[in-house]
Amino acid sequence: MINRRKVIQSLAALPFAGSLLGTNSLAAQSKTAAVVSSLRRDFFKELGLRTFINAAGTYTSMTGSLMPKEVIEAISYGADEYVNLDDLQDKVGERIAELLECEYATVSSGCFGAMSIGMAGILTGKDPEKVKQLPNTEGMKNEVIIQESHTIGYAQALTNVGAKVVKVKTAKQLEKAITDKTCMLWFLNAHTDQGEIKWEEFIALGKKYNIPTFIDCAADVPPVENLFRFTKMGFDLVAFSGGKGLRGPQSAGLLLGKREYIEAARMHTPPRGETIGRGMKVNKEEVLGMLAALELYLQKDHDQEWKMWESQIQLISDSATSVAGVESEIHVPKYANHVPSLRIRWDEKKVKISPNEVRKQLREGHPSIQTVGDSKSVGMTTWMMVPGQERIVAKRIKEILSSAV
Image (tube, rainbow, N blue to C red):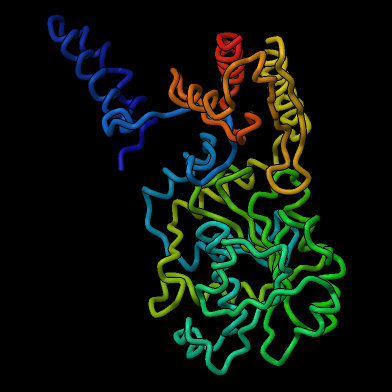
């Protein structure tokens, strides 16, 4: 694979060399420009796809987040060399565990993949015959207890590998639901406030009955403290998305926690073949990219970044509310996507346009701007924008609302 930086550096001398050849100077420069241009093809334009300003957040449908140059460089570095995949995961797992002050870690194929291999490891332990047996869980403990309010579609990551979900509402019901088939207690951090059983009690119940506890923290970075918080709190396994707030590869994630469970989880992953997780491959480039993303994230000035997001949101809010009849609310979700966010509403008798139409015009305009919301409001965040794009969004939302007055 061509190293872009080396090529550009080597090409830098070509115009000068061409000048020494007299009439060949323009030809040399033309060749230089052609080669450099070829290194940056506009694939999306070639494919007839529109890019957009992401004012919505870290949605998979919108391809998550943009990776910093340091992450891209790590991915590019990995693409130029061969390495033993297990050895790489071993070393990176140890490095991540050191960085996050936990027992062990591994890079997974997203948070969903982390949940699946973590669940698989708990079902089978390190028994190679059981590893090959999944999703058939005959002869295994295979029941996972989940609070009813924590039941979401992503729980399929557990059932895909053969687990059976048992739903409860209270701690008393949870204890009553425990049988000799119970293998795990699973918690969804994004729905913390919706469940009666909170973190500490959930962990205590797991310890009381010697059942491992697993928490899904897919979109729970920021704050940075969450990367340390839940393993220190006592959860046996913790899963994060890699391509959201951490800005790593969109198809990568992190599984943190107890070494015995993560080592068992790794038995289901490539390069091993006859396993439920064979298709959840994480390549060497993604492993390095995830490590680089984590290191970079831990070095950030998170307070400064937060202030930037606040000022960006305020700018858009001020621009929207400068239109008569428009109101806005700046809020921060307590769990998951914990960043300054904006909700814009207006009196449709004064501003004669619906929120759905505003979102449509933002999406179909130039540049395209993706937002969220419902039939009563337009929602935005700025944390996935390239700095400076907030000014474009502020101007565009004001234009659309003003034209409807």
